[in-house]
Image 1 (cartoon, each protein chain N blue to C red):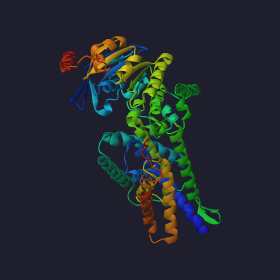
Image 2: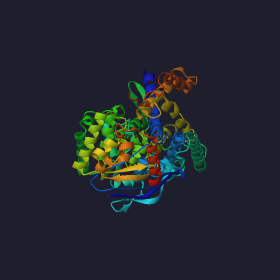
Image 3: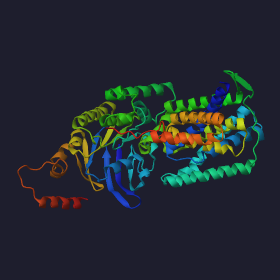
Image 4: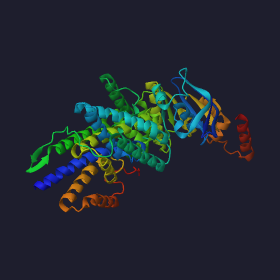
Length: 269
Length: 290
């Protein structure tokens, strides 16, 4: 469905952030994209959704294909229209709009002229409230006064309103309590199953992402270093050590091994 | 009692028209963070355009006014596209300088096309006297108030409920997030300028209908500054309440005290209110969750 092919992204004409990044998202899947701070995960999403322009970034090489169509020259509004919606990092709800107005803003690219279109919109708002009953209780409230978890729910609900084929979530777990994160991830899985929405999930919480994803990529300094089935990745010694924080218990840690990993990393990249 | 009613009505007329101009100003500020120092000139251009349509071209006045509004929309879009769009991302002071430049250009254009002497406006609003609560009030003022109030109500509904209105407020809140919803920020800026120009043009025609067209009209536009700072730079409700408050205050002090105090008092009240509420009466405080 989505195919990112060897792209290079440069900020301010000098800072090379992505250097030959490739990934593929099959239709109907949940794909996880893991990596540490500054690896280029968010940049990848912004390159896909066309939001690089406002940050003075640019795709200088490679291609991005969505359903067989080149999209890296389209602007952000057209990309939303063809079915890709990015839920930005840090929730970014419209604080001075009510919950319901936020949802209406999410449906901006849809037409609402005819009666049928209007009632479809109404039904979708109700659908969002079914997924997130707490939003329904607070529909008239200003979004700025919601709790962090509710704001994240609103950000996801707002994305649902655009009826995207591909929803890209940028760290939905950021700053939320573990229980709440579980709840939100369960709903993301339900949306994937029930609405058939393909999901590209960026996470730092590797354990969580590997538990819901059908396929996962590990990213480091601007390119993919590992990819595969989540179960396989969990067994990978590098992933265990550096992303899941699991080490052989009782064994002495040696600095040599860390250096070895760094060397491998350099080799891989 | 008669004089009180008289002053109140005059104040309300000035106030609602001020509110209309202030609303356009607030809208541009809210959507694009641009402080538009050319707001007074938009009003001036609007008044002269109406004059041109009705007197120079000789259109029947409803058609003339409608034509003016169409031209105002187009001019609003052009100003955004060719003047302000280039300034996106520039520092606030450069943007302010550009709007000041714009105001000079617009004023010069008006002077070169229509000359600097004032002209009588073709009174299309029925004049005459109406008696309300024992006071004799000019009918054109009354009509101007009614029209301004209707426009304000219309625009408020537009912002509350229409798709574009909600999108405009979304852009005002978080541009990048709005962009990620597929809201075209450039188009929203163009909307903001068009609406600001339309509301200024209507206000211009209403004022000109009462006092005639001349370069002085731009000064009326300058009076939006105490209004918007009083009401809060980013609040449409604040612009309306602020406009009416300033309008009333000016006529009361002018009528009861005189000696030019009406020019000063709005600013005195402004300072007092800002001391109590630094965001203005209705300005948005930054929402902070605790």
